Image 1 (cartoon, rainbow, N blue to C red):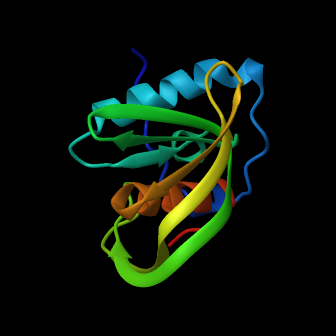
Image 2: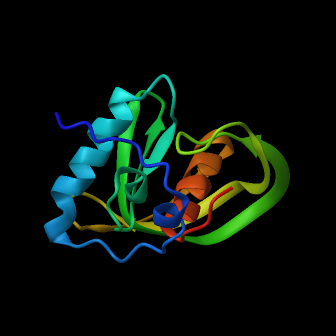
Image 3: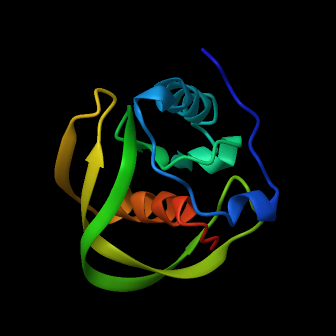
Length: 137
């Protein structure tokens, strides 16, 4: 298990991630391991939060740590306002999210998927995909 340091540098976090490939699977494993190590503080992480500029996110669905490579939100429903925290930032910040999202992504075998998520899981995915796009709440 490899646990990486969480990056707080706003310049690093504001850079748009590049697509992940088969060569980035170790980074995806490191991201998942780092999320598991911070399970009491974080519901999700993006690769740039551990200093890897690749489009990879990890998040929890119940007790399972899920990894998505190259996630793209393709549809959203039901906007709402909320406040979120971030392991890379101090305090809570207001943001708009959607209660339902549909995501296209690749799994750890690079197989493509299209899946719908709702409620808190959808919110976490949106937060981490924003990280991949260089957006900070």
